[in-house]
Length: 497
Image (cartoon, rainbow, N blue to C red; front, side, top):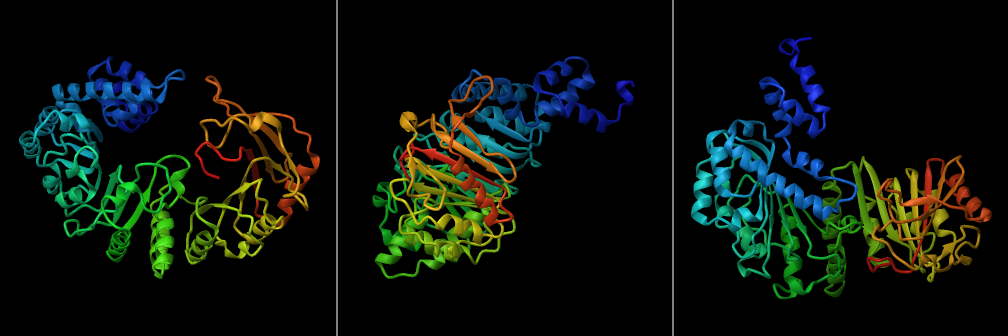
C-alpha cells in the first residue's frame, strides 16, 4: 500500500510501537515520515532521551546526566525548528531565552513544564517577566515543576503564575539553609496562583502556614529532608514551637486540604511521619488526637494513585499503632489495601480484632530477640476475610511456625551478617515462598547480576516441619493465596526494626 493512502490510524499504531532509534531512522526517509515520526519523538522527549541513555552497565547517575544533556539539545533544536514544539506534551527548559523563542512563535500545550535550576541561575527577574509575557496567548500548561537555584531563588516567577489559567499543579523546592527568604511560609505567601489545586513542596520539615492566596487548593504535599522519624525536627525547632505545629495542622484540616508529609525513599514512602507527633503531643497536652490522625490517614490513602492503598505503621509504638488501627477500621476503601505493622512482645490475639477487615496485603515485622505470643499470627490470618498475601520479616534468625514457633530459632550462621542495598533482599538472607496448593521454595539472596538482574536464587534448606507449618496457615483462611517469609539481620540497613 502506498504511503499516501495509508490510513493515519494505521500509521500511528506502527510508529507508536517503534523504539526511539527506529523512529530516528524513519524520520530520515521522506518528508511525510519525518513529520509523523517527529510527532512521537518530540511528544515526550524525556522518555526518549532516557531510553537512549539506558544500558545495563550504566549507573542511574550516569543515565540521568546523559538524559539532561540530551534534553538541553532538544530545547536548542526546538528553538531553531519551532514547528516541532506543537507536538510537545512534556518539556524541560534550561534557558529562559530559548523558552521565550519557542512559545512566542507557537502555542505550547503541555501537560507538564519543568524549569531546570539553570533556568533561574542564568536569568533575572526582568528576563523572566519578559519571557512569561511573550508566550503565545493559546499556551496551555497544566503542571509546572520548578527546580530551585538556591542562591538566586525564583526571581519573582511565583508572583506571576496567575498568567497560566490552566495551571492546577505546582511542584517547587525550598532551601532556607542557603537562602533564608526561601522558607516554605515565604514561598507560599509569594504565590499568586488562585487557580492552583495541588501544591508539592520539596526539601522541608516545616509545616506551611496556609494563607488566603490559594483559595482553591485541594491537595498539599511536602517531602521531608531525611528518612529519620522524629516528632519535632531540629529544623522545625528553629522555626516554630510544637504548639504552633499543632495549630498549623489544625488549620490545614479545617480548610479541608488533603495533606501528606512523606519521604520518597523506599520503604519509607508508605509511612505517615506526622502520626507520631500527633499522638505524642496530644498525650502530653491532654488533647484528642483522633481528628488529626484520621485526617492524616485518609489523606495518605487518597493520594496513592496506583490502585493500592499502602500504609506502614512499622515505626509506630504499639499503643499509637493500636489507636491508628481503630481509626482505620472506619474507612471504606474499595481498592486493594496493604498494611505493614511491627509485632511487639506484648501483642496478644486481641490484636487481630483491631485490624481493619478490608486488608488484602499484610506485612508483619518481628524481632527474633523479642518473641511474641505464638497464636497471634495464626489468629490474624484467620480473622481477615479479604487477606490474599502475607509477608513476614523475621529479623535475627529463623522462627519455626509450629505450635511453639516463636520459641525455636535456627540461626543460619554468618550468612545473615551483611546487609545489601535492596531493602527486601539483604545479601545471603533466606526467603521462603509458599503458594496455596504448590510446593514451598527456598531462595537465597544475591547481588543482582548485570545480565539477569536476579535478586534471589533457589537453594536447598532441609526444614520439612517448618514448611508444613507455613502451609498449614492456608487452612486458616480460604482467601489466602501466598505467604513470603524473609529471614534478615537484627536491624536492617535503614537502621530500624
